[in-house]
Length: 101
Image 1 (tube, helix red, strand yellow):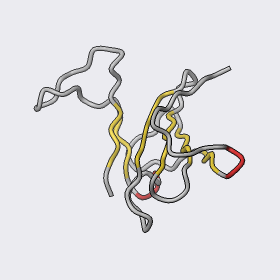
Image 2 (cartoon, one colour):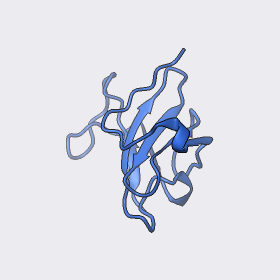
Image 3 (cartoon, one colour):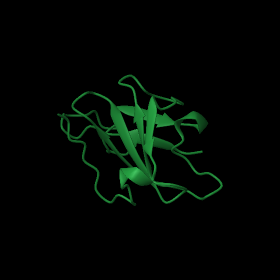
Image 4 (cartoon, helix red, strand yellow):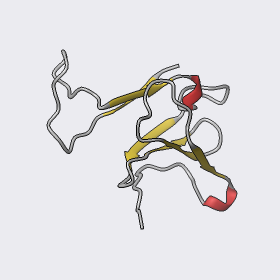
């Protein structure tokens, strides 16, 4: 089970040993539902909404869905909620943007 790292490119970041920006948070593990499963390995696009929640669009390994994580989510954190189903109109996202009202 792999991990997903979130790098905030909007602010200066410390550089890691490879010279790449260090992640703000790393989430991964069985409870996150972001790793490989019996359907394969998913494509994951992540953004942080203006509400501070972390939104992960997941496609390619089972039904396309959006997993919503709390502000302090890190490690093997379970999502707060899942947005999924035929009525959502979700289909294999290539670009992921969260608009808040």
